[in-house]
Image (cartoon, rainbow, N blue to C red; front, side, top):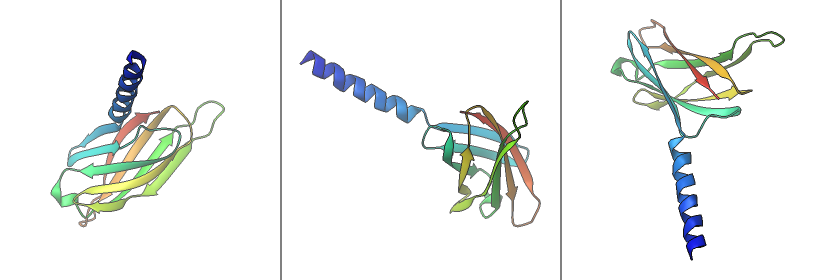
Length: 126
């Protein structure tokens, strides 16, 4: 009975740690606050990211994201660019490919209906 209790407790603890491992990062730009998040921990390969823009005037904006790892000795630059799909109310979903572990630079290009493009920059580690 003690062994079963330990196994159950370990399983519950492991499941709660996986839930806590989701990704979220805020990129502040003068015009607004931009939050980049993922429901699952980031990993190499395809990842679905959510972009949330705080300011109401950007709710109907077009959003494009570029993730890249700059050129390093012996390796060329790696880039993944995607157009985000609107989820409504300033939230957007975008699929990016992170082809290897390391630090990736992230540029989020936001074009509101008035056409004045802004760029939010951040980075992420996998």
